[in-house]
Length: 347
Ligand code: N2P
Figure 1 (tube, rainbow, N blue to C red):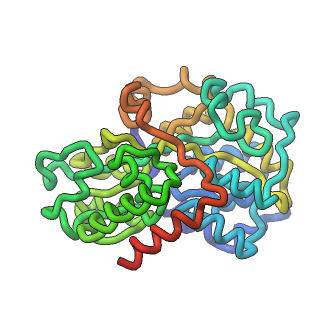
Figure 2: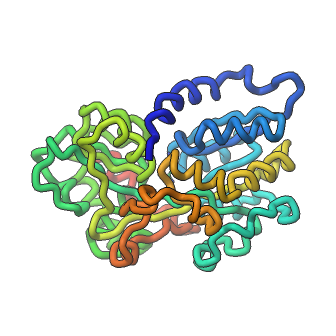
């Protein structure tokens, strides 16, 4: 997997994508996507723009909760969203999504049926799976001796000030629940309180909670141990071969981010074309190899390199995968989590 070129170009891409002048270009249509950073190969974006004579503008969020809060606050103008499946359900409950027109999506036949059988939207009525994204830990081998491949490595006081955790309650309390041997979707108040106590102990060792700088932070050697998403860490590891990436032995969040169209979208047809484009076998494989995530797209698998398919993080052994879970929609139990997360943040 050579993603070095992608990383070099992604900064320029991010800067360009925020220019307001991209909003209109010679009458060509604009597709505005609200998504995670470093989550679309720039060349795939360009191919789509050429094929459909349009501009693609990317706006980014760094957690599902930040995305939901922005939409709740009235943000509009998006044609396509890329939330995790549990957040798709939250958006659906709020009536913010529109049904998909399958007649415009011939490539839906490529989506992995085994994956879909367990998905939250198995008939793809409002969302199409984009990429699965395991949450991992990564460390610098030269700085962290005897690294135990467990969430409990976050207890190590010798790494104090050199660790970052995601600023995301589902990821941090979820990891702590895994340490307790519980589901990372538990809504049991006692288990959640214990998980928060673990997170409070971890907080004493970390430099900060954050969702973006950890990538350059570990690649540059500023941080020695970070919690992050597999592909983001693999992109960073292209810059620093001292990085090691693992799924903790207790299991982790193995969520899927999905493509969905807001009810208020202006360019609905173009949004469908984009969903279909990235679900094509060759494009899906090219995109996966570049960003380091795994699309549940059966037709794409034969186009992947052996190197990519050999990744133990993206294709974990069965025993490890069995301990992983997607993040679930908490529904009306959400306040139980926010209460404990507030306790962690205010400790
Ligand atoms: C991409 C992060 C996507 C994974 N930068 C989070 N669900």
